[in-house]
Length: 116
Length: 111
Image (cartoon, rainbow over all chains, first blue to last red; front, side, top):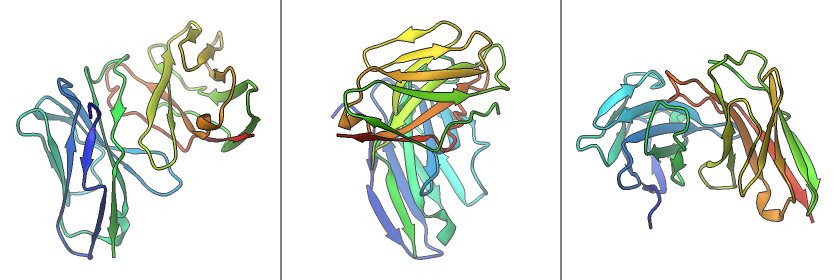
């Protein structure tokens, strides 16, 4: 389809393991965002890419979290030494323009991460 | 970040209008007001946005108070497919990448 694609849709892992979550944005969208959503809460900003560079990573909770977007398209969110508190739905969004007023965000359906 | 306040939940009868309020008393002069909604098990989707004037699109209308300290999202005829969590968000031009979603209003549509 033409929307934002996220894989896997569900990931169950054990505490301490390493996890990668992938986001394939809408073709041509230069801005890409990662959010995290815990049960009953609204999405929480993690990081924003403009092209290949992370323009704002101030939402990453600690140094176990890292994200890349090497070619300015697909992005991978990487979580090291996972903890039970990392369990959440991780949402990716893209937009034609970023950091501006009218850049409508298009969200994927999210990757649900469960850390046992 | 400028914050918004919304009721936790609201109910509406099907095919009746719905007015979803949002307070944003700390809004700055350059903040845009955005609304997104999130259906169950889906990512949020854009609904509408505005700065000062009221706005209409195919999904909804946005009424913005003259002092901009509050706004109202209006669904003209609620359908069962409108049942979702509605988020009112302020987007600041220079750091507009950080949408602050809050907890939103959960809308229940009664058939």
